[in-house]
Image (cartoon, rainbow over all chains, first blue to last red; front, side, top):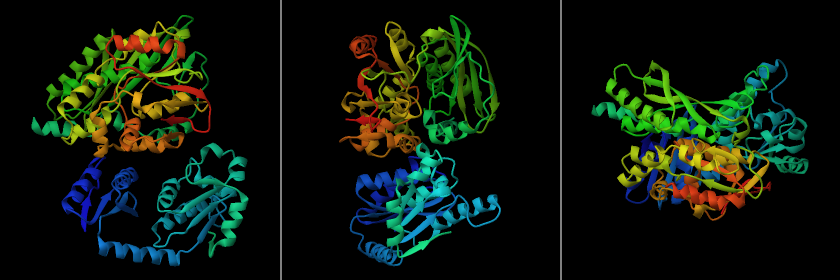
Length: 203
Length: 342
C-alpha cells in the first residue's frame, strides 16, 4: 500500500501525485490519498472511474478525506475489502433513517438545529452507514439550499446512501427548485421503505 | 528571480473563481436597497456587468475582474488579466472608456515584476481604446492583478445574456481548453505550441468580435469565463430555454483533449460540473470533451445568440477577421433537458 499526502495541494496536484504513485506500483496495488477538500475527492474519483480502478472514500474529519484506490489484481486487499463489504451489508441491511423535522428533539429551536446538524455529521463517521435516509415535513429543509448539512449529505450519498425527500413537502414549503441532494419521492415510496426496513432510526 | 517565479504562478486565472453555487448562496442573502429604475442591469441578474442609464441615449457599463497569475511571464499575465477584465464591457455591447488598476503585490518581491504586469495591462487598455485613469494597490502575500473598467452603451443596444429565442444559433468566438492547458503548463506537461495557442487566445480582445456583431441583431451575448462554456450557457438558457450543442463543431485547443485524458483538471472545472452538471445531458461525448466543456476559461470568447437567418453570415465575418468562431448549437423551446450535447 502506498500513501500519498496531498493535504494543502490544489487540483490537479492530488490527482497527479496519485497518478504517479499508481505508475510507481508497476502493476497491482493500493494507493491511499489524503486530501483536504471534497472537490479533490471528486476529481480523484473521476480518474478512478476513467481508469477502471476501484475507489472508496472516507471522511476522516473536517477538511480531511482519504481516497483509496485499488489497482488491478491486488488480491489480499480485495479480500479485505470484500470482507469489509459483506460485513457492512450484513449489519447495515436495510437501516432507514427518518428525519421529519429540521431540528432534533423538543426544546429550544436553536439547539435543535445544532443537534440535527451534529447527528447527520455523526452518521458520516459511522462504520455502518444506513441504506436509506427519508426527509419529510420540516426535514425537507435539510436537503435544500441553505441547509448546513448539505456537505455531509452529499458525502453520504456518494457512499451509496439513498436520500429521498418528500415531494409534497418540498412543494408545500416552496422548496422544489432548491433541492440540492438526493431525489424527490412520494408517500408510496416512503411507506414502502419504512415498512420494509429492518430498522427505522428516528432522531 | 527563479524563486520569485515559483511563487508567482500558483493556481490562477478564472480557475481561481469562487464556485457559482457558493456565490449565489451569499448574494441571495444580501439586503436589497431601494430599487433604482436607472440601474438597467444589476446583480440580481446574472449578467456580465452592471449597466446604469444616465440619459435616454447613454448608459454606463461597469465591471471589475482580477485574479492570480496563470502564466509565468508577468508581462503576458498583465495582458491576459486586462483582456479578461475588458471583456465584460464587450459582452454587454459597450465600448471601453476608462480603466483603473487593481493590484495585490508582496512587498518583498521584485518591483520590476509589477512594472511588467502593469505594462501588459495598460497596453491592452490602450488597444481597447480606453484610458488608464488610476488604480489601487495593496501589499499581499500573493500577486493578483486586474482592472475595474467603465464603458458606455446606448440603453437600447445592451446585449442581455438571457434573451435568446428558440431557433437562434449559438456562436462561440474563441477556442475552449485554455484552463486545462494552463494547468498542464503549470506542472510542466503542456507543449510550447499549445501554451502559445492558449496565450494567443487569452490576449485577444473581444473588441474585434464585438465590432463585427454591431451589424447584426444580437439577441443574447455573454463571455465565457470562470463558469466554463456550459456554466455560461446555462445562465443564457435562464430556466426558460433549452439548447442542442454540437460537440464536434466546438472550437478547442487540440492538445486539451490529451491533457484532459491525463487528468490535468482543476477544482474550478469540477465545481462547474457540480453546479450545472444536472442540467446537461451528454450523448456519446468523451470524458475529455466533457471536461473541456466544464473547463473554466480565462479571457474566453463571446457566446452569441443570433437568428438562424443571420448566423452563417456572422460566423463568416468573424472568421474573416481571423477568429476561430463557429456555430456550435441552437436554442430550442424549453424541454426536460436544458442542455443536450450531441
